[in-house]
Length: 267
Image (cartoon, rainbow, N blue to C red):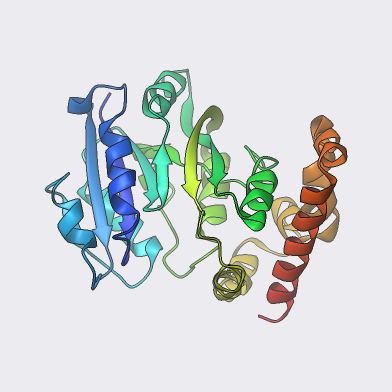
């Protein structure tokens, strides 16, 4: 099975090489992995570094939704995997995804994500992310190319909730699974202000996402509702035990979620 790994970039010279090295280190046969980098007019050495790993380096804007869709258009794999430049793959993740993808009727996979970094809020983000696997807060990352095209790919009018939007379309179209072999997300240089600014920027697209699916949609009620977003997702299926075992991280997580909630209300 041929896999197309699509990475979107913009001024990522600090991260892109580690991402590309991790793809080249996959246990899955390299001849069956295609790397596509879709850059957004970087002014640093991102593209120069990327070209030492793949000849499929493109420029496309204005936002990551358009970059990802363009990457799929350039791809030749039966399945696609989209990544951010600050992500690093476990050496077995592509192979494990292929094994799961070969199960009957599968059209997409969630992949567990581990946030890297030893700063307090990096640890908080790692803790928070551990609750989200295969929930409506998550989004499929390894997708059958045919299914991606059938549902229309990413909605290019959105930046932020386009992941949730694609995930909803895929769940309506077929079966999604979960692979726990992780992707590592390098947030080692976590900056609270930059993080909140980014969340505030993404929140500007939420009204369009809500209008598209309706405020009474069951998934949206979970994604934006206080009861699930602040409580349900952290306690369901026995996950509440982790909260009691890590009180300081729990406090930090709710503090961070509260700040993000304020950004949403201020949109």
